[in-house]
Length: 389
Image (cartoon, rainbow, N blue to C red; front, side, top):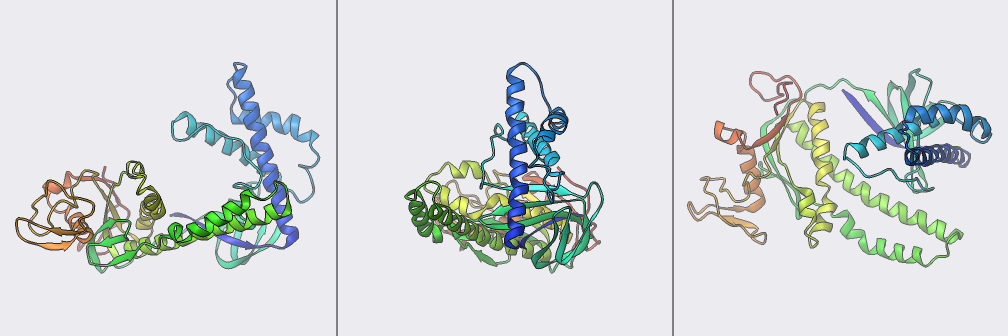
């Protein structure tokens, strides 16, 4: 299985300058390619990344001495054109907006390789092509990779790469679990386990507002503005890391200890249209939650089932199956009028989700199944590799 890792680099002042130079060359190449693409397209031509890459290497790059400076990896220009081509491909498929010019200090990154040769990785040091040895804050797995991506967040640099890892299914103490996502509790499991929502953005919004207001009052181009810009970026990164940490812990627990995980297909875009709840919903990271479940189920040998969006998990009684006509959002306790069963609303929904894969009638409510690994006959420690649609 192909997995990726991203970790922080421990760089010196000179190494940070070298990284900034590489990011600047990648940004210049990308912006040059985008401007040339738009100019050619307006003149009636249909350019592509291969044509632009060939012209840049033969005509433009030869006249720019600062790109050929000693210690600069020359592979970053070709990956800049590849990223531009991918951006246009996503735009033509309707998966993204029209490519925009990159700006210095915003999402600075570049990609390098060793001319097709494998790059050894392992320990707390790594030798980058042309750049040389750099240190990391944590140990890296001993493996090899074909290319490395380096990016900047605030004034810190991070390295990311993909590597092949053999995944072994883990023993699963629980066969099926239903997961109900929410704002008050990030995840409520059908087993009764709940994971609180850290609400990282809501708890830090006052400091973010104060720093943003102070940044707006600084003179553009001044050192004080630059220092405050870094401080604001650090705080935004801290909020994002708190959210990612909680999501990784929940998804790791689910995929490692449950053979089958059932979640709802939430309409996050529709939920975000409610401006009273949009900020809280965005703070939860529901899309990232499902994305992590998909690859971690493959890693630990579990199976992920995405229930249909219209499956009435909240309105249905988990005890008798009676369905309510209406259920207000303010009703946090589910009380069945038919059998008198009283239960927490989120727990009731999670139990119903765990039941939605049992029985032929309920199978029609399942949207898709992401199957990952071989399953023994008892079905307790894995599932079939067949992907059911």
